[in-house]
Length: 413
Image 1 (cartoon, rainbow, N blue to C red):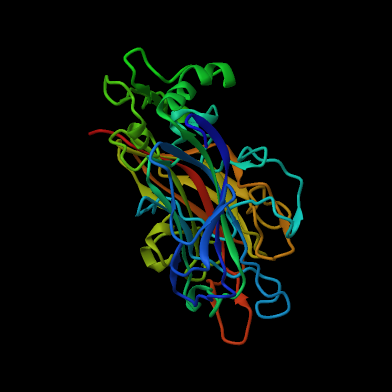
Image 2 (image 1 turned 120 degrees about the vertical axis):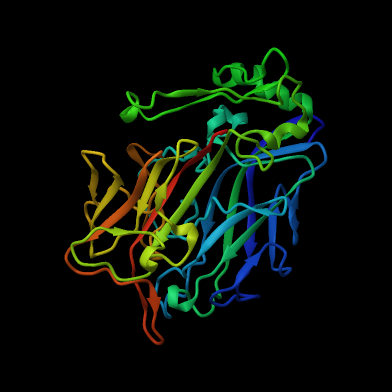
C-alpha cells in the first residue's frame, strides 16, 4: 500500500487438514504447522498476519469454507463438526465470538444457493461483524480493530466424540476474514471525517477538538416508559486529538474503556435430550449445554445489556418452536421453526450439498436482554430431540442447535 491508502479485501487463513489432520478435542491455530497459514494481497505466511507500523485494520466479517467431509465415507456427505472458530487479536483470544461450521455464509461454489439476500453482505464483502466505520458504518457496529503492528490469527476448537466430533478431520478448511485497512494517520482521519460525508452521506465522526465521536443511544422501545432510552456520550480520546494508535480504543477494539460495545456471537447445542412438549433452556443448569460460551440464559443488571439482532436454527425433524423469553413479559415471542416453516435457517446446512443461505436471519425486531432474567428456548414436537453424540460405527446423532448474533453493551457504574 502507498503511504496514504485505503483497501477492502479478505485474508484466507488456510488449515490443510490433509497434511496435518487434527483429532477430536484438539485446539489448533495459525502457525501451529507450516500447513496452517494465511494468503492475502498476493502474499503468504505461515505465522500470524501482521500489520505494518503505519496501518490500522477493522474486521467486518468472517466466513468458514469447509471442512467438507468425505462424501462417500462416514459421516456420508456431512460436514465435520467444529466446536468454535475464534479470532486472536494481537495474541488475545476473543471469547465473545464463537462461530461454528453452520453460522457463516460463503460465496464459494460448494452446495446449492437459496437466492435469499442478506443484510450481512456488502457486495462480495462479508459484514456479519458489522459495517465498518471506514465503510460508512456507525460506532455501535463495534467492528474488531487492530492497531499498527498488531497481529491477527485464527483458532479452531474441535469437539470431543461425545459432543458429536469426528475422530479425525482430513479435509481442508479456510477461514476467510473480511477487512478494511488504512495506511497513514492523515488518511484515517480523513475517512473518519470528510470522507464519511462525501462517500456515504454520514456525519463526520471527528469532533471540533480532534477527538472521535462514540455516542450511542441504548434503549428498548418495549420498555421505554419504565426505562427511557439513554444517550451514552463518549469521545476517544477524551478531549484530545485522535491518533493512529487510538484506533483500538474505539468500540470493538481490545483497548476500549467503559462504556463499551462488542460483538456477541455464539451458539448452543443440547447436551442432554429434551423433555417432550416442554420448553428447553440452553443453560449449564442441569448440564443442558457442555460449554459456558453456549449459555443462552442471562440475568443482566442495568449496567449490562445484549441486543440480539440475528438468529439461526438448524433444521431438525423433531424441533417445533423457538421462544425468546423474558420474565414477566407478555405476549411472548414464539416462532415455528420446524422444517418447511423455519424462517431462521442456518446459513450453512449440515449436508455438504444442502441448500445454503446468505446469512443468519434478522429478527422482526431485536431481542433486548437488559435488567431482567431472559433466555432462548426451544420445544420439540412430541418426540425428544437427542443430544449431539457420535457412536462408533454409526453416523452422528443430530441434536438441536440455535445460533445468535448481536452486540454486548457494558456501561460505567
